[in-house]
Image (tube, rainbow, N blue to C red; front, top):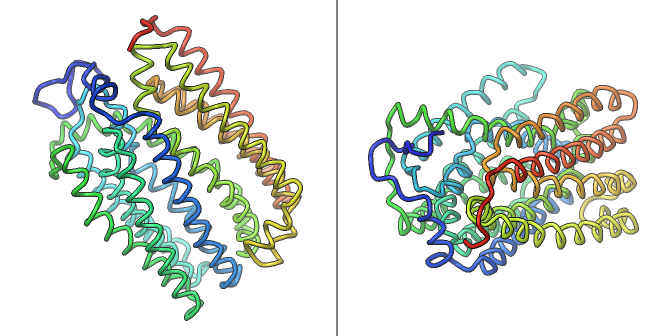
Length: 438
């Protein structure tokens, strides 16, 4: 994108240093925002973990498998249609993007998502029972609600108001957890849980997210075909790499589901979900520092490297401790959070956690690439990981089942991390040198 052309069409172009000035003078403290982001994502991950513990304990594994498969189908489609608009807004250091145009595109994307899911359910036909179709469509409705609220959270994140983002996350997950805790004791139908999830997100989004974001920027639905075209061209690479990342994390579930046993999907999907909870926490840290990294890349290269190191060291240390814990007490952990039948995957749990070390390290390096506006490089890295994962799933899962899936995830995570590290090093070498003062 031409840096001299505002996405929003007409209007004043803010000087490139405006956001940097706000971050250094008018925005929140970086350490305080990081603490809020980490706390929020820890609570979010813990709350969602609690929701699934209730499902694992109270519902048949077949229904749990349907939920995990539905999320594996809905999430990549949703992320592609989102076009990475949150990242566009958050990394918009020159204030060229108007929120109203992003919000309108998000509504259009939500409509397309539900149409695609309905079409997929029609294609599945008699292969999917009515309950499975209902779970897929309701999972889509939940994602639509989250996508809509996500635009307001992007505004808050851009202005380094991670405290408000955290409050929003806590309110949503608390309502869903309360709803789930009540209903799993009265009904064995997971569709009721999904309905409550959707209503909770809409309620908090309307009553809290929307007014909080409006205090920072004017937000009104807006449509302009030329602006939409530029946003789509800018967002497609972001949407693609996020989609490919999501596909890479869930690819093995598609292959396991072909065996026709939702219980296997539930058992192995549980391991992936536990890993995903850690990724949620890590993502909170990454998102909190992403605007600052983007500014440092343009104005203070040494500050960029220092900040990146401050994330890599504690995250890597925590992940190593997590791997050791799972390796020693993995069976006990699975028995505590789910039914005894899940504990037979304890050995694979350790292997998946090792994969998580490389996966989350790659996430940090990949988000650093985004801060450098190296979107194509980030895409190349995740495409490499997806290709490796796909080939290994084809070769290993038919003969080895979940064990083959675990090895596929591990090897593809290593490949992605190494690619991100190499591309980030290249981006830092070839970029023009900057001063050492922000």
